[in-house]
Image (tube, rainbow, N blue to C red; front, side, top):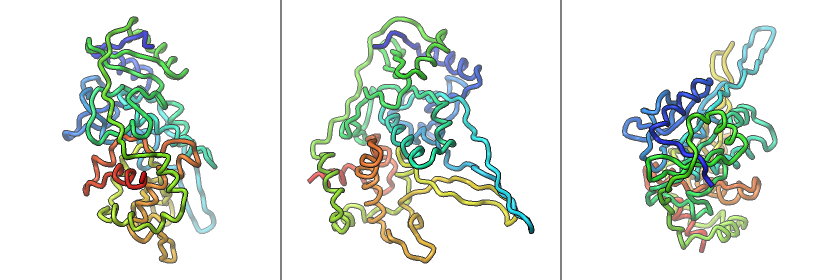
Amino acid sequence: MADKTLKKEDLGKLVDSVRAKGGRFVAPTLLARQVVFRSVKSAEEVATDYILARNSFKEFLFPQTEVIAEFSMSKDSVGLKGVEVNAPETVVFGARPCEAASLKGLRALFTWDFVDEFYTKREDRTVVITVGCTSGDEACFCTTVDLSPESTEGSDVYLRETEDNGYAVTGLTEKGKKFLDTHAAVFTSGAAKEKPLFMPEKLPAIDLKRISERLKDTAHYDDPVWAKLTMKCIGCGACTFVCPTCRCFDITDEGTAFEGERRKNWDSCQYDSFTLHASGHNPREHQPQRWRNRFMCKFNFYPEKFSSKGCVGCGRCIRVCPVRLDITEVMEEFSK
């Protein structure tokens, strides 16, 4: 139950308070007529009327490209030196509950067989403030994957918009409660009437249990339905880049023959080079095979291996797909 409120007119005070303590404030902003997460310096930059930012805030925990080591080579030696993780204290404001739920899966992956400090240190130093949705569109399907605008998984602080142009504020985690205490002067006591939430209609033809059962049976590998449903995919990878749960990366050495940087760069299972062997053999030679892998990752590998959601129903992949490939149509097919 919320016992604090944040007036929208005081959002600037919160930005200033975070920045005064050396923190980074990340929020949805309007850029080139699209709402995207960016680091901001003032409340005037923050967008408050939006459904979902076009990009996921995962890129502030897991950047699209980053240096993880530096190398040098000479006639007599080879040197490799690690770099310090750049992990500033960060506040992510205005995330939606669906994408905050992706953090459990990302954490599980980046601590699975090796603790990736480049991710874990950033997440440890990030406070996620979610805002319950008061609007949505036809691409939203969080309720179909058992989430909702009321979900709090992955959130440190949960906000509900109020009728008096503010937010009802609830601290959820120790990190979130500490954040509220640290910036207590910005918040006021008391409750206010909350605006109703937008609840996407649960898609009746989708059965997650049935999808899981079918994907566990490897006989589906050769099902012609994959080609039928996904042949139009052009392999651009946009769906994976905006997805809050996708986390594939490649490591490359960039520089000269004598010195350079070892970088971790985002990769996509939708690229034809993703599984291409040095021999020239590609076990996923055709696009429907790559798309099958993506679907398997979200509804079989992630849930089975990490007990977490591989899809949070945010609908970003549907909105950005240039050929209108809709993941819910595949979910419906595999629910039969």
